[in-house]
Length: 116
Image 1 (cartoon, rainbow, N blue to C red):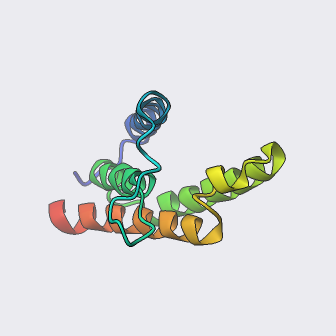
Image 2 (cartoon, rainbow, N blue to C red):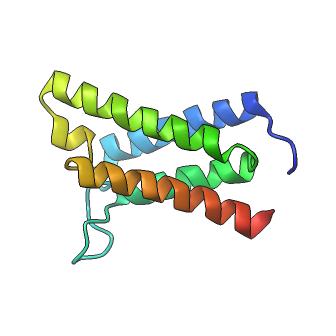
């Protein structure tokens, strides 16, 4: 896909985020570690998957989506402080948020390299 369809992409992002949140609320599995000795959880895998899909839908907007991902992490930090649930909203602090951003970039770049 050479052209980015922004409306389709934004709708897809919203739908996928909603599914991830509902999956967590209903199943409660996203905080579990994927690899026992590392701090990689299914939340991180959801970031990788989400941005992989974005990379498929809109491969020519890496900077835009990375900026949106970083902005989202800032919003999560502020919201976490406001609600007193900073560890929950920040994937256990700054290292978790950095891992989220790395997973975002990894997912997006994997899609670009694999399918474009």
